[in-house]
Length: 148
Image 1 (cartoon, rainbow, N blue to C red):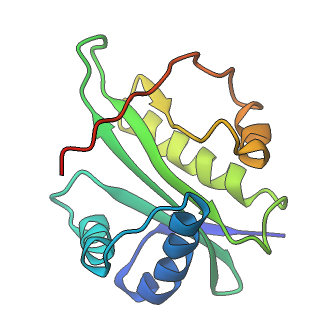
Image 2: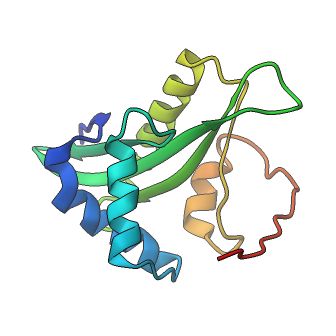
């Protein structure tokens, strides 16, 4: 199957929302419609450090990836954070997740990033089989404290 990957555009909103809701459902995350709208607006805002790809075939959007850049006290160049990656369940196993990750890698290289990283749940075995083909688990443990 051949996929096309491109930056998210205003015309993608309905398809993006379906996939983003799927992503949130997978991780059992509930966001208000206001926050979902804000996420969408940020992806389209050239002055906000949040970017997105949509990927599909035959005009149908089947996957999304969101990423941003961060400075580091440990490196001369920025890091690229792959924040969200989601592929329609009917398309999984056909290489689209890998193509989306590779598209973010290309952007990160072009932006001069020194590292790309992402998180997933330890129990997300299907995605981890893909991620493990790129690198080993970092061994880091993440702590979270909700502030609002």
